[in-house]
Length: 140
Image (cartoon, rainbow, N blue to C red; front, top):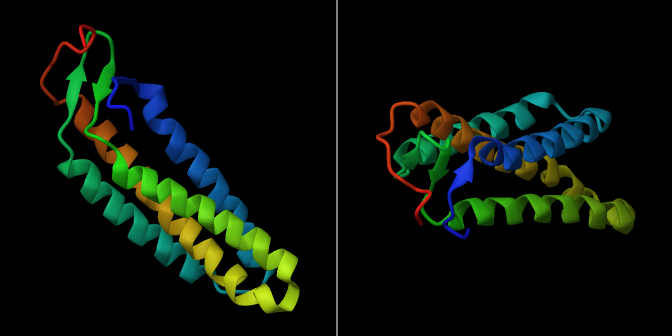
């Protein structure tokens, strides 16, 4: 969000955390006897959208210091907020009991789509990293 140069490891951290959250949701979904293809379809759709976004971003890469500057990440921030909303839906649905079941059924799919978007974006940026032209970012 701050438009600062990021090292390679920090680029992957949100995607890894989102995938860990989505895997926990997958366990919830499998425990509730729902078919896993719904979760996988949401994950695949999120991966496709995230990869498309990652391939269309304008990158500034400093190969000497192994850092990248991305444009403002408003979209990724909103996806992360949607992932938090999915967690809150699951928690609220659990507290609501049987009345919260519809919220608990949609939360894993939202989490899978969000994790897919963040992961697809990070993978696309990582693939583009090597071929991007060098820009001095340590001065900014």
